Image (cartoon, rainbow, N blue to C red; front, side, top):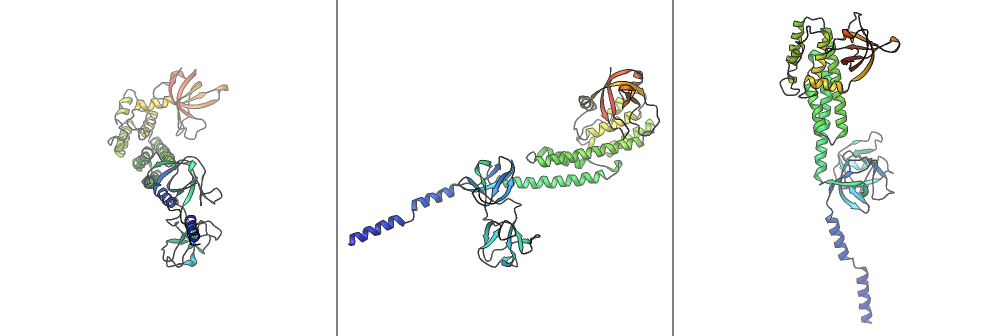
Length: 395
């Protein structure tokens, strides 16, 4: 009898004693997981409240988005809540920013049917704001213990856990730089040409394009801002020079010198590395420094602000590379109107005008009345009826 009792006790002990070895193995497995910064490898990847496909979807992430992976659950990685994730707690349990009860649910949305993403205990401190869509709830940051889940198939290891913090810092930097660049650019665009000093904003936009390749959206915005600033600067410069077009050659030289003095960054600080005498040297070969020379100077000097270390020849080389081939009959434009976009008109089929023309390289007078083929680059047409072109060659 005694032997049967001992035997039964032995079986019970064997059957119901906790699997110590298995528990220890499980603990080692948990401890062996090393957090890392993960990169999403596809678009519209779902982040869920729990590690299963039936769990509520918290949000979607896109390719190259980063997250901090801190654990795993079957086919899912456990991740820390993303920086901008919002959570909600019922305000009745909060007094002076202190939780007044145990196991108070924190939810993903401000209503009692929303998924629970964590709990807070009595004495926990919270910082939050009253929810704008439901004043009975407080909007807070998710508890540090909260976890969301993403399928392992859509996450690649990008680096250690510290990488995400570095990326967040750099993202904050580029956002601040982009905001500052746009504020500075907007301020410059509101000024008269003579007051504009766009170089600081230009350098800010260029720094974003050069140094923040991991943030393509910021680069796109920087390029757009740079393009807008460039266009505004050029248009104001052209308008300014047109208003001075009737000046004498001496006055125009003084105007050029004033431009150099007002924009020393284009000549002295290595930004554009322009030889301030290059236009004068070129113009000395001509008998007159005409309006079109002044206009071309304006376009060139504006272009150099965005093309460091480039010469006048480089400017025209780029212009020729993007030039158009035009065919028609050249005719002198004899009307004396203000801001006309050319000294000549190109007539096409049925003698209809198709473009305005001018050139500082070719004497278009010798081709008047002749049907020719032109290599020409677009120029501002000052809101006239037809496009304007600068002519490089005539055949």
